[in-house]
Image (tube, rainbow, N blue to C red; front, side, top):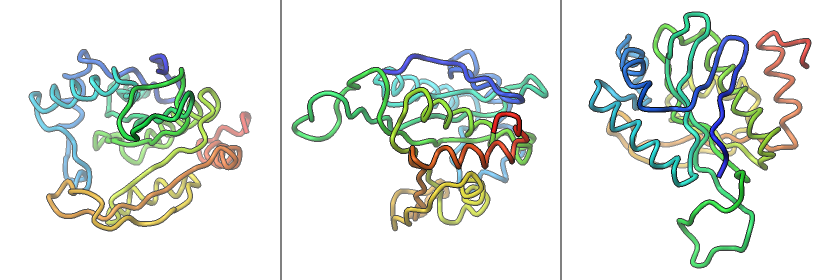
Length: 214
């Protein structure tokens, strides 16, 4: 199971999610919520407590690594994100297949998801740099084979942000889940492979203005 880490960038710091962040997360989620049409974001303190507690329980199983997003420009927590659906391909093949504990120190593949931001932090580059920090950890430290990103097919804004990273559209899974608006949701699946990471990293560097690191 991977060790807890803090990921620091130029304008963003991803801090391990904890119960201590609940009040800040409630404040962030209480800004203009009209942008959450396709994203389920906890509303109010009770929902936020349940959200954080459930996430920490998943982390204890080695299935997720959740973060609170701190925007250094304002020194405020402005949302949350996570590396999730961590799969470990080390060790013997489990039988029967299905849910099993973490095997090994680092995952072999992962998703990035459950990302939400306060309205004031949207369109500021916070999301892009947060994704970059998690991708860097996954590909350069964990050396995963693949990162998966997903979005409701109707969420044009989220899909555009994923595509801007350079992720590949693998396809659309129809009737994939219950949507945040209580409809049946079709989900667009994207991926980035380890072999693609150098070009993706260069692309993100350019968009973030990190030319000296490219």
